[in-house]
Image 1: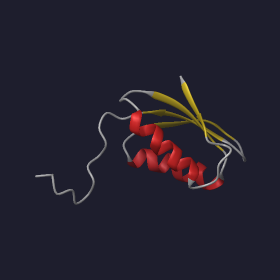
Image 2: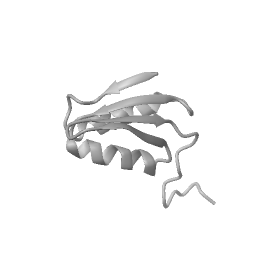
Image 3: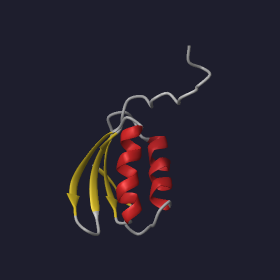
Image 4: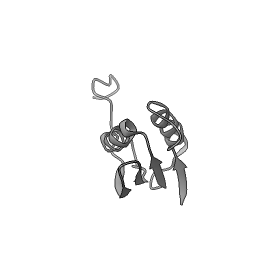
Amino acid sequence: MEQLDLTPWRCPEPLIRLKLWLRQARPGQSLLILLGDPGSRQDIPAYLRRQGHDVRPLEESTTRLSLLLVVAGMPPPASGDASLP
């Protein structure tokens, strides 16, 4: 399984790096995400769930969070998307 260690960076850098990784991800692909920044530990799981991905916390301490991400099949449509019927 691939691992993305985002512990060296503070918000918003972890989210930017995760979004770049998601651009090349395939549906069903798994990723171990390591987070250290307090804001990122809160924001990134919420962001991934809003995007429809499966996110499971593996380990959590006062300084670190490990998540298992399973990439969703299709991103949810943006609200107000003109291409929707």
